[in-house]
Length: 464
Ligand code: HEM
Image 1 (cartoon, protein in one colour):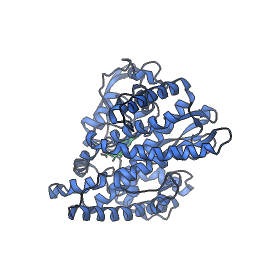
Image 2 (cartoon, rainbow, N blue to C red):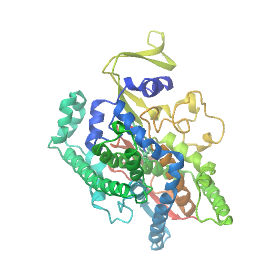
Image 3 (cartoon, helix red, strand yellow):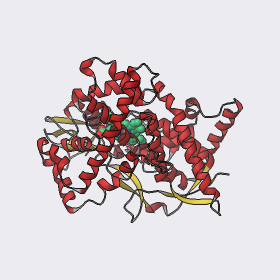
Image 4 (cartoon, rainbow, N blue to C red):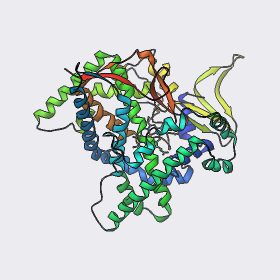
């Protein structure tokens, strides 16, 4: 395992072609989502990335701000209705569940012009299959499942392919999810292909743009039908729980830090006054970007609670990994590079990188957004896609949706915090991290001590 900046850069960026994802990791992704962008590697991955990248560019993402906003307004109205029925004017609710449903509706509408119906609990068929999938497939494994899981990395690729057919409860559940995604995605693609072919106005969702971008690609670089279909599961799985979980941790931190909560709310309300004064109804991208306290709190939460704390890679040939911070061996020798051999697996620890004292200072183990307001951060490594963080990974297989996620977080935070006040519903130390399985080795969702399911109960009231 490493968190050393130079080592991470070597493995994940400079020589990433020599350090692919391990075969069992790739196979698990294929089982969940099919042959989409997250599953692919090498030149196939370059093809996926090339076709998909423009859809996640900053100008393109502006189109989605109204989608983020109108979905969060729906959630706010539901909270207000529930609060109106509470005699004390305060309710304890699982904000994690709310946020995951909100993020699912957002990703459905923005990415596929598809309604999961998650927020109003009138879910589509796909929602009922997808709901709770990580709990069903990752938590509470049987003894046989545990045995398979701990040994399958030693199986050759040809055997791994047969995992799909194992008569195990979690494998059956994963198959059910992929089948449901395939069915919906095929239907959506057919409609979008027809729209495109008949010259109808192309909708603005990612999938419609993907159909158009793919059609105008050189035929040898085009994505196949199976690859196109697999993007629906890939984007939903990669983009839904990750953002929702980060936002849940942010509300948890704000619930413990009334001063920060007030500072952010004051900033949002000041901005709202300017929006009203200029005659607008909602925040623009520029408004959101200029809320520096909110942005600092989002960055700090991404640093402190990286939902994908580690990723795995395997060396395809012998190599020497350089170190930025040399270590002293037991014999007193200064080690500046570490040899690895072909087939050796490595864990790249983003959570440890995000807390390196050399980069983040002595209070790296404390949630403190003010580090992003002054010049305290040491920027010498230049790693990371956003705010020097490794949370979205780095290099050719880094997160393609990071801008989407940041803008979505800004939009949701601004609306929710303007209207509501959050307090802890239990002791902060009873909220723990629970690894679920979106990206092997797992998204760190909040849970309450002693209860093995993802949840974050908070006390919510209308803000003064
Ligand atoms: C807080 C939110 C998010 C976090 C922390 C996050 C983190 C990551 C990380 C660490 C990876 C690399 C995984 C690896 O190398 O094994 C990744 C890849 C990916 N993410 Fe995200 N992600 C987030 C949100 C999103 C969103 C909103 C979308 C889409 C709308 C998205 C789409 C993807 C895709 C498609 C990949 C695969 C990219 C490739 O292989 O080229 N992510 N993400």
